[in-house]
Image (cartoon, rainbow, N blue to C red; front, side):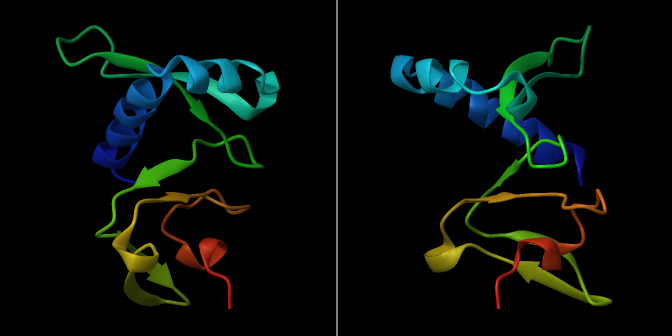
Length: 106
């Protein structure tokens, strides 16, 4: 996972949570499903937001429509959402966002 991917995810969730209905819905989720994450603490670029977690309690990354580069069965690939729409990426059981096969249905 790149620092940019996590920063962009935190920034996106901050904007999503600015919508009162979205914040209310997220506030109803179990505590084990969300986490407050601070990026670049103590710097002018510091930002904090509550983000959704995957089943292994790691942040679900929000990936832009152009996709995410990673490794599938040892082969470098970029996976993009259908019609180049943004999508969520889970680190999966191995904890590696780069194992894109965790997120591919066949």
